[in-house]
Length: 107
Image 1 (cartoon, one colour):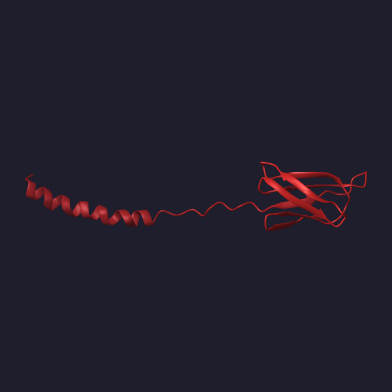
Image 2 (cartoon, rainbow, N blue to C red):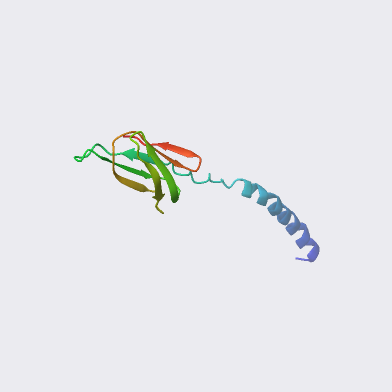
């Protein structure tokens, strides 16, 4: 093929690929960002010693404040896995505050 014939054949093909590329990229689905796990907290049933255990997960590692209706309150350190445990506290309603988020503990 001579140069003129090659240009006549290849130019439309090159132009078509440039037009199709943005359309192909737009068709690629965009995945939603991973959801941040919701923090949870629970109170165990009353143990033989009359106390309960608090445990939670899904928190951000670092300090958090636990407080309850039974007078217990204090800072707990959330582990790297997002969990914590507070052993042998008086039965009652408990909450965990970390940053601006308040999580009610279920029993």
